[in-house]
Length: 223
Image 1 (spheres, rainbow, N blue to C red):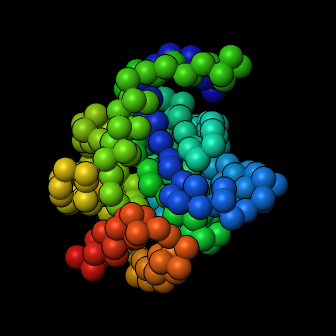
Image 2 (image 1 turned 60 degrees about the horizontal axis):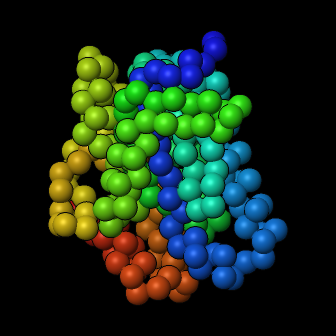
Image 3 (image 1 turned 30 degrees about the vertical axis):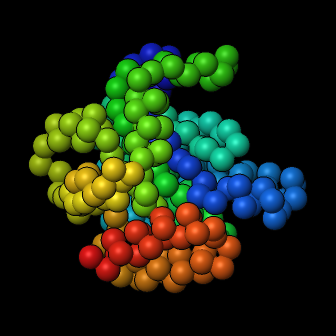
């Protein structure tokens, strides 16, 4: 299916946590390999989150495209169907899983609305891009979070048990305090335990400010 340049779609804005430390400690080629590895993760739709759900939802590789710039990865969905929503979530989790295994933590903010994507001209325009970026700037927590526009759209998908299994409506640590948001979170204990173990290792390489993000995320898991 062809992509329309301008339509309502999802965007996932992904921030590589602690990227400044990576730049200082790794060579240019090492950083390039890490970015290429993370971008390739968007092609993987066979992650744990959707093992069972793939029987119910058809997720195609062409449903999302990505742009990588410095410490950010931006994902765009092709359209606005529930399949597009789950594909962009699937990609976000694939990148998150690959990043954690390589000792990189990420934050992800997802928005929805009218966006122009012209990949040939490298032209990307739309309020949801700004909304996702601003939400990410306020997020003091290492997770995948939906803004109001994405929440509103997702709520139009009726009778989808998969949504109830994957979404949590709870408080997230923001710059101005704790605010209730929709969080994408795995319910599998083994995945959570692995995340906690790796996050604790980040204390050895993170600055004092970055450790706040780690503490907030660990508190979330404890809650």
